[in-house]
Image (cartoon, rainbow, N blue to C red; front, side):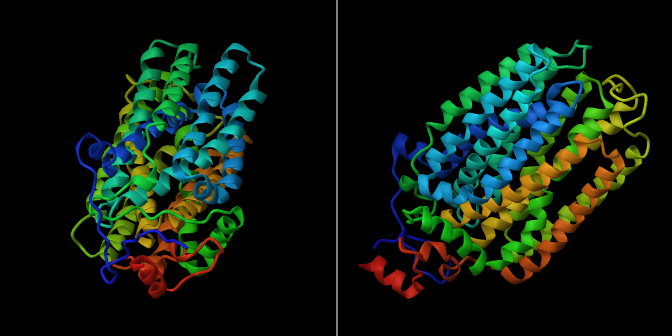
Length: 475
């Protein structure tokens, strides 16, 4: 029986390994690997964000796009719950590669819709397939990003990833803006979709360059903790064990649930409803750029020299402040229009009402980066174990997608914009408040080996005490 090495905290003995040197050392450096991981998501989820950021997948009628997202997030919610186990069984590298495959098909379905207007069912089916793919990709991504960083670097690594990922949305939106700048039809042209198909295919190719996590050594000389659970039964038991031994994770579930809910109002019911195609494209570009600044801004709080508990409370406070600023601002715009307003899709980038609304959209992008960065960081504050992190990210994506499936369906059946906006506001306030008891009771200044249950579980599902693990490592 063997166990992985673990740097658990200040009270545990640290086993240090020598990092490789030269070109191999640079390529296998955790920062390099997080950059590669970011570019995989730049090309795949980044293009997905770009196309959805246009409202309705770039279509004039947003109904098909909304229904495709219902299918996508429904399958992602189901598969996502078990995606951590799949990741731990197959390995993060293979799981990531499998996770990129659905994005190309999804982009192709919109091209098909442009050519064959009656192919809406294909778009919905492609969305469902993408849900399976995306569940795998995000489980692998979250596990690698959080496990590769030391405790003092997690905010920085999240910011690096989130910035590169959102740069994909920026480039994708810029492509849409450039190819449709003089387009008055309200629907994205074929060339845009073809460009997105090519970019998502490149994303799959980039995923082949990820290093096997078994070879990774962190910047402080500690090895990345990998699960040693070879059977599916043990993997599924690990999901149960994660919740049983660390029930405080449940207090993060409202933040998980809300983390994609707000996209529907932002993308469809604000950007998609009010602006011309050119305005929507520029807004999406600005939204992605603001996410880069939001992620790095939040990382300064999360990786500051303050105690980790202080940083955790500070991030929650900053998040709530930004929620109220953007929500109050957005409310005064939302009361001015409904689904029945005659002047929808009319605000262009040269119109006077555009400036204020564009700055709101920039602020919403900043809030999104703050929310996602904080959520990932809180998971990373609970554990350093790649197996446990994969399960937590699986819960995150599952609940996130369940919420998204519900709100996209609500939007597809034409619920009032104001109702969707108010529900968004309520969830954005409830999430951080529910997380406060978890921060108070669970976040420590260092993660200790006693808290890492899965890394102490052997291939038969038995949990070994810390003392046994240390003896085994010495042998």
